[in-house]
Image (cartoon, rainbow, N blue to C red; front, side, top):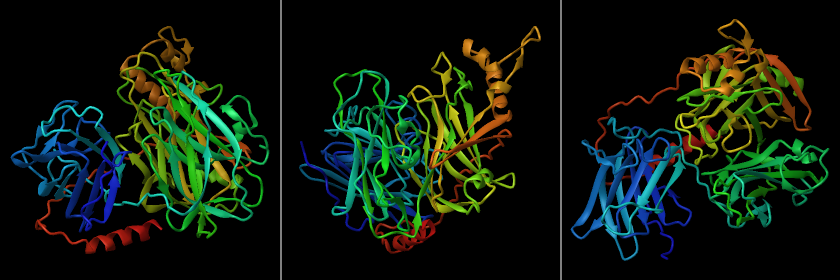
Length: 560
């Protein structure tokens, strides 16, 4: 097998491998947020190369280029995909080929386009993470790519380098040679003592160690309250004391990679005590394989040089709660679920309550999830979004840096909205831990850290009633659980779940928890759309990256 490719264009400020084996390298740079963006692709093939931007990580709706160096010289076209079929050549060619080179082992192509092309067949490049798709062939005959394809989420205009340091201090939180059972959903938990640090340190980078990419779905490392003193290594949620460990320290989900914190913040760890941590790994094994031995986990890099702020992670949204039935109906094109957190109740734990500053967010649902939005409310009015993914992909989950710091003040509220599609399901979908169950969560990374780990809500479904034809009342959730309702019934059910009273639960880092009944969910405003403004900027063959340093410096200053 050929070795990894190496970058060929030293003028490009940004580089990112798109695959695990380092066979497909993307380099890029831009002068101006309203101007051109230039790419160089270096791929371990002498065949055709495909590269594009996708709304959800798949072919449908993707904007792409296909090119290579064939017997008659270079070829290169701007195309778009209408589905899982051969793409169509664009009428307007918005990409310009600058160079194409090929040697015995690899091909390099450089091309540019406007960041905003104003072509409805082209993908809008914004300062949010973008799902990049790639594929390549072994010859210049453009045929099916087979396994030579993939998806990577990258923030092109607000990029942060994510590489593990070669000489940094780290510790591993991993399982060791566990047998994954032949069932679709399995949660394994290991409580452990990390290496003892006599003084406070800061974790600044988290790197996943994935032994079996095909089954490891997500991992969470929790800090345990003092009541947890025992270690164990077996299936989760079997009545162990570690079931109360919910202070998120680090996380990873399928499609994610290395995550590095901004330079002024760190996750606190170590104070001379023998603290217990719980590693939770969700295995998704739909094929029921019985031959998987796994040693996955997380590598956490830490430093004794303390940063300005301690990072906190707030687990926020909606999860299954005992004695409250919540069904997502089948055959629904769109069904919205909500969670709310009123920070005014944080004063029961932290008083006075400081402003908290959110710099990143990880959004999470399971297979039915299609969109996730987190709205920020003040004085009863929405003032911003803390996170938006209009094309949520279960296979592509990673913490997203927000680009600007979002400040949550005391008495502010945050609302999460998850949109599900169950058109391919004949039975209701329950809330739960299984991959085919659902949840609606956001993990907010913020500073300064508070002794609060969780803020969840759930509609009090005992309030749900509907009038049957004979004027008797019955729970609408029961009606929906025994039959496939008409679309109007689904809409009514969604509205009722949103407007009835909710219960909010707040949990602190000692696993003390409090509940309060709150009103229903406020409406979120429409997601802002990209406005395309045609530019008269001239097209340049030679690109200088002098302005890039200034732009990135400004972005980093805003982040920090």
